[in-house]
Image (tube, rainbow, N blue to C red; front, side):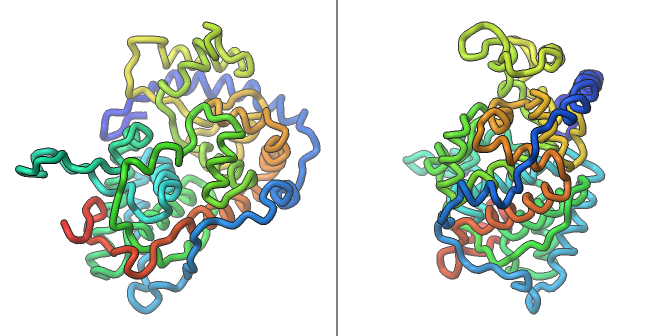
Length: 371
């Protein structure tokens, strides 16, 4: 799919992927093992863990100061979704990257400061989260969407609603616009006063993380296996750059062969879009090869059919600790929606900034004192 920033997606190759999926997913679902209830499986892993530094949020936080905030943001996201559908999964990813690094505080939105802007300063400008490799491929459409929504809110309720809350609302809106559930978003976050590049490394899952690594990252946020599997379901929409799959389709673990656990027809299709060398760094492929533009539970069926795009996706079905959760969500879209909403609520409550620990920016890419 083409976007305003030139990200290339070759339509005929997407169709090929869809054909591969249609021939495989249907046959795999008939062989599913008996699913385990999500709540029961989650309890065995989560135990007594508690998320660090959780603070109370409220559905009616802006009831008196900006009662129409949900609708104001929704008007912007709906218009953006019509013009730039790729902005939807991009905003979802942006919200995840924000919450997993020092909490849901809009620190990811702070723009890098150029050397020119730093003027005659002897030292180079400090690096922010967006400078890090893990965040460099975050689509500009996501940042633009949040800025537009924030500007609309500021025009009605100046200095009241944080960028962190606007981002949380926009993520919810895009889930619904793509066919997913609508859910009420708790509000009351403050924006971070800092954005530090050094906090990013190790805070975000990698494309080929093992389940051990994934569980460790999630545990550091007070989240467990059920949250890991449910939130990974966001990959039912969106795209990944080819660089994240090259190892799986050309040289898996130094063997010079593709990952034997990826279906051979998917390997062939991906190789058409992602050459081993000399390809465009901007070419992307869908996470969900069966319904890439629909927020549904097909992602989990794909994992059972060996159609997971990233190694970290496929690992969820291969690992005995997370396989029952994958099977359960693959079998029932309603349960997936319920699990996803619950995990989004927990993720959205990580390390909330309150009071003097935060600010309410006027422009999301600039700290209040510099705006």
